Image 1: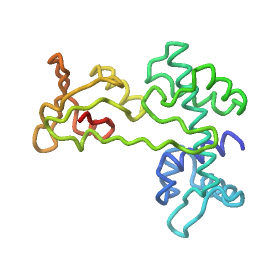
Image 2 (image 1 turned 30 degrees about the horizontal axis):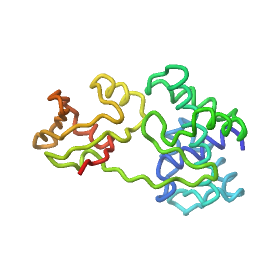
Image 3 (image 1 turned 90 degrees about the vertical axis):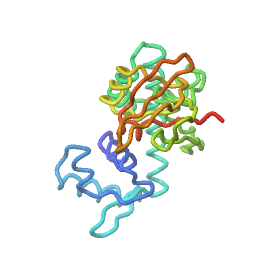
Length: 217
């Protein structure tokens, strides 16, 4: 399994290839490679039974491909925990270096690192870390955009796009922080979050699709 194959499988996974068809155009855009390179890699992964191909539509991951994608995610997220907890990286800084490290890490190294970190279950963005066998624990969360005024919740997970994480740092939004949804302005307006101490934070409508919360009953 080469780094190029690993990146390609992860791209299909991140584009939703577990549940829906991913087009060649999506892969060209995400990986910044040529259409011919996408076609070539699809052919290789088909031979290894890591993807299925739907003519004139695109590709999806097989169970075998999904297992590899989850194991790569495990490596990546364990490295992110290490970089954040032990080396002081901010959550918007961990992704790039974890992306490099996952490709050069043996399974033994990852398991030793996992034990060293006391077997974390979530990465710095709240993403669940898959188990060693490639299965993923089921975690229930609610997109912030689906909350109603008056709902109390704890920030559970956020999208790990670098610019979005910088936005959340600017807004002082952190994992585990508790809020009440105080106001939603009409016509796709911003949402106002309020802490128990009365501190208010205004979050853009689009951002609310990328924040996932655990509602407090």
